[in-house]
Image (cartoon, rainbow, N blue to C red):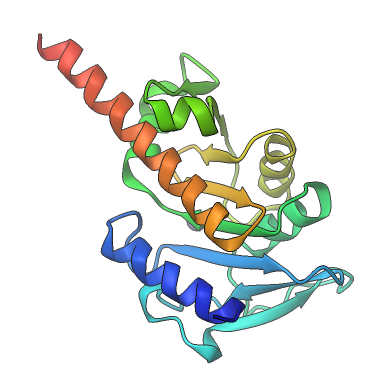
Length: 189
Ligand SMILES: [Zn+2]
């Protein structure tokens, strides 16, 4: 599979597995020549095809409007971290946990074995979607972590491969789900 085919395959998988709703997320890969390949704005993750991607050059003063609205976040991650790929998902449980917990704590502490092993702590950041301010906050956290939750928005996960970025988003959502149901059970018991 080439890069586009791999992102298309995992985009479909993400929607089929309920990680993200069809048009709520974006995917990119670092082309390692000061540019990235990223999904275009408005292209559903489960319907990605050859025409669903565009290249954004990091030297351009303005990101082309055709690119995902959150291309600036992907770009800042590549400029400031070791990421090869970035997956962004509006995952439900991660978003719910960010809304219910961020007043009391700055991060989620994973309880499950996958989350503990691969992520440990999942930090929250806040910021306007598509803003440089948010992009910088996300990139700062991803220098030392594999994923981050934007409060009330969703997950940005990085990886050393496309599938690693996808898996880190999956683990983040899984850990958030475990935390959600654990807290709910504690309330009900
Ligand atoms: Zn988003």
